[in-house]
Length: 95
Image (cartoon, rainbow, N blue to C red; front, top):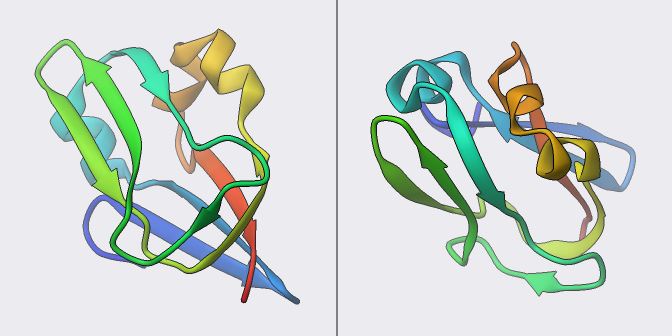
């Protein structure tokens, strides 16, 4: 876990980042998501995710360093997919 809001899962040289159940409960239904673009170099602590939900608007800081290699495009198109258990946001290739 990367805290109460984001989870991380590292497999090989890549790390996937997603929303915890706690974050999903705190937010309520997500209506808009902004994720980092593929190819972006991010550092731990950079604000990389913005979510607008029925209860609040939040920005989350990256829990990892690396280059973004994949984002949840389906979640951007249909934000209801970000409300499901273990919803992922983006994947980085570790530095």
